[in-house]
Length: 597
Ligand code: ADP
Image (tube, rainbow, N blue to C red; front, side):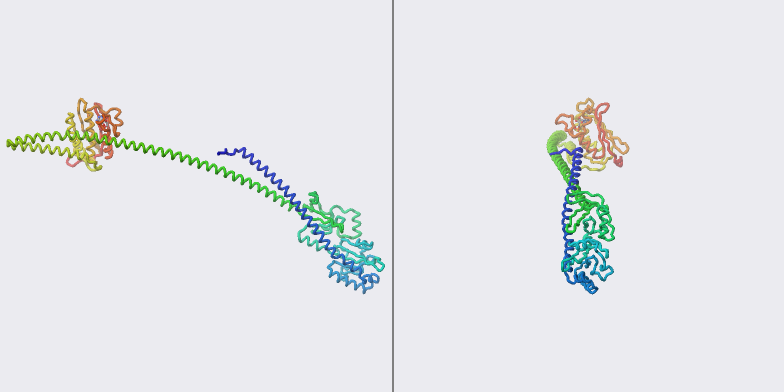
């Protein structure tokens, strides 16, 4: 389930692989796009070249009938046979009309010597009438019996055109003259330029005669050799135009049909097709830079696509790893929480069980304590009340006898004794009742010595029984702030412990001493007993700590006393005396002295 995190080395190898594949993708796309672009260029060129050839053909064919039609006109032949001014004028005007209608550049009639007899432009400054064009190839062709056609720049007008000539035959079919139409091809060039096409037409001498760009016109790809220059001079084919060499740089074949040619520093893809009727060649050029730019764009796009794909893959992979880590972390957390919850539940159950057990033990202890206290109390009460009761019975019995003797004086004295004893019993019971009552802690001024006295009174019987010598050095009227009944209980506990300790002692002495020290009152309860056992010294104030036999001590007396004194803001501590026995010291805040003491 867990996959080890990718090591840096593996990552580096993957990155290198991605770069290498990226480069391969870019190079391959470049090659593919280049081939594709060349295919497209070849296809476009083929179509264009076909189109241009047919537009040239159309432009020329439109006029082919014109010189032939005029040549068979009888008036034309008559003018050639009898060139008088009236006939010239007539033919001039007819040629002018036809030229306007046919929209040709010029229309003219030449005699057998090559002199122009009549022309459509007879009334313009550049009129052909009277001019000798015998050197023109089309004239020579026609006089030789062929069809005359020729591209050249007008000798008179200086305007380029295509010349188409037809022979005029006399009745014996001899060639006596020629009718010539000059066709303007500049319209085609304008169309190409406007369509932003790059087209060249070269003639059989490889001289550019038509071009979509004027600067390419009348240039030659290569050098003009002297014999050709001589011919050109003779025919005045290009008029006074100087033929310049075309500024061609690098050439490189691209495919069978296409080649790369740099013209005027700009590389072009060139495709050529012959125009056989005239011995011309049409060349179609496509800017190589734009093509290359598109190719480069495609390759760059492929590169970007590859980088995007790699990034996407990286992102997906990163996300998968992060998701897995998150999932693992959350599973781990769940596991930890589950374990902790389980442990806590077990702990809680254990605590609850312990608490139940403890409470059970406490209940048992309290119950046992109550029973033991009840037993002790019962014994004490029985002992305390038994003596006066026995005395009362004795006094009543003796009073009955004295009553029979009518000794009323003794009876009266007995009754006083009985009353005393009754009062004493009532006092004991009242104390017991006060002691038993569970009253909330009060905070009133209490006479501390009175509390000690009352505790002594409460334990008067066992003290007398144990033959204990009680020494008091008290400060009557010295007040403290607290609860009188609870303070009495403290002293009862301390005196009872002292009594227990004195049980087996040789000297039985109990000392109760009060000392005033500034704002505090110190009470010392000391005995001459066996002293506190070392193991008890540190633990005697703990609840239920006792060194006494079962049924004799509950181990609650000192802890209760400690709690009462602490509750009043005082302190209690125990010690063994150097001369033997234990001493308990209680320190309380003094609350003044009762007036009159
Ligand atoms: P109990 O008296 O029921 O044992 P206490 O809390 O009153 O419970 O006393 C605890 C223990 O302190 C006694 O068991 C005893 O060992 C020791 N002790 C208390 N008072 C004295 C004393 N005056 N002399 C010697 N030991 C004492």
